Image (cartoon, rainbow, N blue to C red; front, side, top):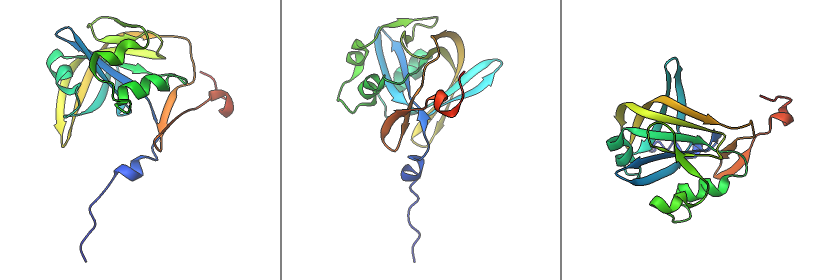
Length: 169
């Protein structure tokens, strides 16, 4: 009996995650993608990590520019998530035609209507299999009033309402 190949894609679909738009600007051109592989690393100094497929169109611009933004999407912003996920066939600068995008500190574009935008400088990159893990020092933050986050699980977008759980932040 031969062992079956390990496939983590299906089990990982059970892991609900907040939807973010990772964006950068390099040599006058903006690029970005939708991502759930984002994590806070440290509060002091403020550091996050993002995992980007080496074949993604944003990978090299992030590596070469040394900067990126993490834009946490709110409930109702699934249209923006779809634009940046590639499922609509929209690429490059055209993805930025929805919403108002402006730089904070590094020059990476930040979505003004996002729950929060983190402006980051790359401090380290680690290559792991098909992806690169970029560590970013958070050098600027923009946030707006609390709202329900946009969440992705099982191939669909949804939300989690703190009121339903008896919580509010």
